[in-house]
Image (cartoon, rainbow, N blue to C red):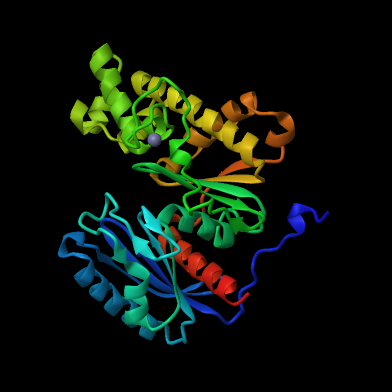
Length: 337
Ligand SMILES: [Zn+2]
């Protein structure tokens, strides 16, 4: 039997150039990149999604042409990372919360019409996982799991160097892994999802609840950072933890336990070589990674745990465009195989 590590990723032609398009609720980012992830040109503009898909996509196409001209190379295809839900096979965007009014938009066909090149689509979390796998903290790892911890929690799973899509393209909803079967309600309709505990939004909500329940005597530092109880957000909590606010530290410790539980499940289910954590909350650095690694080790089977490390993502704010580039490279490799 071939060892899993001997399976290699699809090999792009070295001279391939890809247009990466990142479509978010607030911004559109576009870049032309080499197959090695070197950006030759890039641009960002506000999404203004209320203008409606036709106008936004026409504006996006103009930016794409400008970015291609600036790069001065022949572009072989485009990859798109877009907020979901969407259907990769038909190339339709299906009414995402962050793009109000975008109901059943034929995104791939519209962009093909404007750009006259092959276009490949995936959701933003899968694109980020592919980007980190190809160009970032997961380089060379046959088996890796990516999680982004920001407003929500999303993820992507790489198995044998390939993104695991699942039966209808929706695998990797790691934010909706339940860590408490009788726990907090989640936006997805379930209870106890890790997103309901450890996303930036959930950390802030749990902290506000804790302040209201216990009074402000042990959260003076936190409130001096945030302003009012209502103004407490994820970043304020992280800063308060860094400076030793007792209440913020208690909420943070619980967050680490919840996230650790999620890491343990990921390790036991996927047996990855690496877990890569991105998103705003991962910027907490050692404050997050040191206790999280300890908590994960305590509850994992040694044989699976000892070959897996938990590391920060590397692509920073380029993850959107470079993730989309990785989607394009994968799509072209599939189309040519
Ligand atoms: Zn959920």
